[in-house]
Length: 258
View 1 (cartoon, one colour):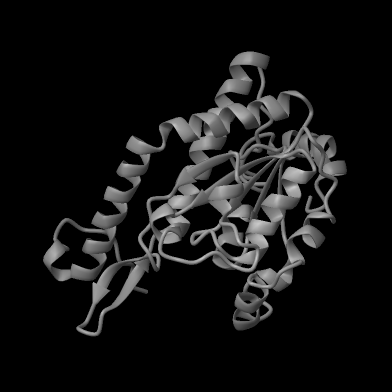
View 2 (cartoon, rainbow, N blue to C red; view 1 turned 90 degrees about the horizontal axis):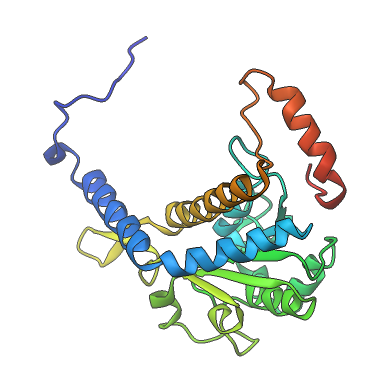
């Protein structure tokens, strides 16, 4: 079996598409780091306050954005009081085409949120690249009605080019805190061919970058204030089983996905 390793001999000229994408992503993440500090700080402050009061962070997204809800859930280095809001019909594995229709269907957001034991001390972070689909916007409205703080991660440049959905509002209009993932309209960063098509999406990598920056700041603050942060460790690390089992036992009553 032949194993391929990265090599300095593989020059950018041989990988024009990959190189352009990687350069664009690096630029994008740098812009986020330079422009979204205040919003990330506000999000971390709201979440830290909620967790110290016994609340929980919920994560939600439809379509590909649902992966960001799972990114923050039960993972090595992740905070334990984090719960994804998951609905199979709004994901991709049971039908990608139908999920696109469902995320634009009014009335589903509050019904999905009602399945979770949320309270006024909780915070929800909603990922929606365009920020206009019905379900994320209605989820935000329902969460605010329940007293939750709503954090939105959206591409404001994209949202500015798209009309509001059936709710008549965009996610950024509803949220208490808005973090701009700096994405372009249509999400894709690299033009290919001569037909105007683009590839190289950015919203997933940017969303994970933002989410983990926020959660790392929260963990840092909890550890400094309380001497301990409830963080899962990799299952392959020493003493991981007992450490993680204690956290699962502590937070299972509020997280149906543990």
